[in-house]
Length: 132
Length: 253
Image 1 (tube, chains in turn orange, yellow):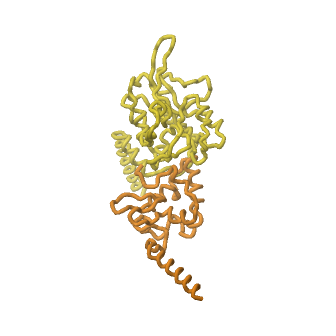
Image 2 (spheres, each protein chain N blue to C red):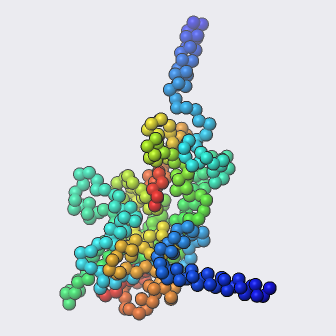
């Protein structure tokens, strides 16, 4: 009995310490300070974006590379442009990275690291808007 | 009523005339401004065939402005030599879309300098050999690499008679939005495809050439500057014996 109580207390203490050390709770993956934070929804409703964003950009990439169509609402550079945030010096933080000042995982990294899903887009594509 | 319509028509014609005049005054600037606002919405078609006409008689010995213009535009200048890499090997293997080449007629001793890039063949050998379909020819004649499909086998580099393709050997630090690239993929000149899809009328190499040796345009449009120049002046394909029907033609060799 005493052992069980001690164990429970230990678990409670551990959980409390995790709660204290973790970054502030976010209700959404959208990073504060990004353009996306000021909008109600993405290019499609949030529920659809959460489930199918990869299908949208995968389909789009073929259309853009092979047919040259760039005037569409799905584009990876569009994702980056809208979801990227800046640090306190006004410098862009990569969307697949971590804010060095707060330790907050950025938009893409936040879910992909949690889910353990590899994110190969950015081995070639820019993680910040480059202006060209 | 009919008077009113006529007046509208007059106004329209007058405005159109002014617009045309403005185009003549500053064609590049105006077209570029108009174009950058409107990215391509319809798929490219084979009604257009893009190509280059290079006048080797104007191409100056020792000048490599087209190379540096291309590298700046397409972010190739951001690729740095890996630490500890051999200088000679780096120069030989660094990613480049244009090289300057000297050709000599052994009989007469005549030497020409010319920029060599992807020749945008109608029947590209790189496409023939590509095992994944990454090397392809877009409907408007641009031969390019779909890097989503490229596995980096470099078969295309072996097949290209013009040595036009490069390989990205190392991780890339800085990647421009318009030219994504990464380790393990092949790439080559794509006739500044981002400009094509955003309404641009020139290529970076053409803009950089102060000698006016490079002309870009639509080979299929009989009224285009390039088609007229090609009709007027004799021009040749490099390695015409291979019957690849290249989209890049040369004058003066």
